[in-house]
Structures are given as structure tokens and as C-alpha cells.
Length: 179
Image (tube, rainbow, N blue to C red; front, side):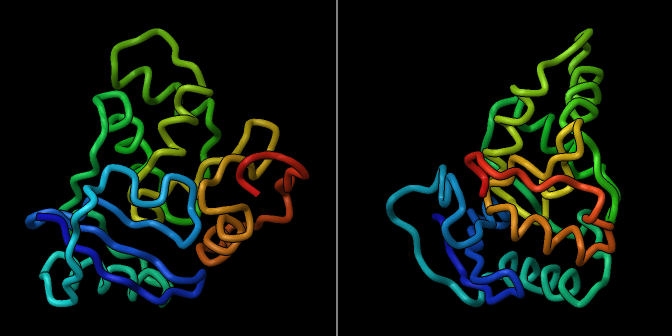
């Protein structure tokens, strides 16, 4: 059974989803791929322990703390490639960024490949079902562009600034799907 819970955050409403005792989704309002992978039938549950644990993590994060991911049981749905990309994202330290190319290189190493397409990695990042917790906002274009955030560029900038990243050195795209 899948369960949902709403959370009010500084970047707007978030929806958390859990299955059994693991967190399977965290989406921003109007996010691309919002609710992807959820069945049609889900129940609201404000008291499910894993959802309470996730809201505590979010409370700490938005209070400026750096809560550990190890304390959250995460179980995003995706193939081996996507799972590997998401694990690489979880290794980007708070307040730091990597380029799509760097994420592609790290993913290739983990999958024992010589190289990997940054575009393919970008697709996996865009389908990340655990926004903020699996920090896809910490990935930028090789040219310094803040492109490619399914939650929208304004939210990406807010999250990066919240973590102390100087966003003035990045380019804000004028067109694209993540504006």
C-alpha cells in the first residue's frame, strides 16, 4: 500500500510518498514527473513512521542543518542505471555542486564503463523521485548553467542558496524545459 503526506516548505508544498516502511517519493508542486510511479490508489497518512521521519529530516534541512541520508529508508523506483545515478547524487556534499559531465563520469566508473553520456545521466536526474533528499539540485551544466531542474530554476536557486552556494557565478537559462 502507498501512502501520501503533504509538507509545507519554504519552496512551496511538497508531497511525500511511502510504501511500507520506505520513502519512495518527494515531489514539489507542479514538478515535472510529479507522482511518477505511484499507483492510482494511495491513502493519506499523517502518522506513518517513515513519513514522520522524512518530515523531521526536511524540518532539519530547512532549518539549516545537514541531516544525514543514512537515517532515511529510501526506496526510489527505477532501473539499475537510474539507481546508480541517484546514488552518485547522494554523494554530492551539502553546499557543493557537480556538473552533469562529472556525474556521468562517476556513474560510468560505478557501472564499470569507459564513459557515459551526460544527456542520459540528465534524463535519470530529471526522473529523480526524491527531490531535495536525493540532491539533484546540486547538478549544474558544464558551462555553469543552472539548467535542468524538474522543480524549476527558481526552486533550484533557492535550494542552492539555502546550502550556501554562491549562485551568482552560474548562468540562468532563458529558455528550456526547467524554467
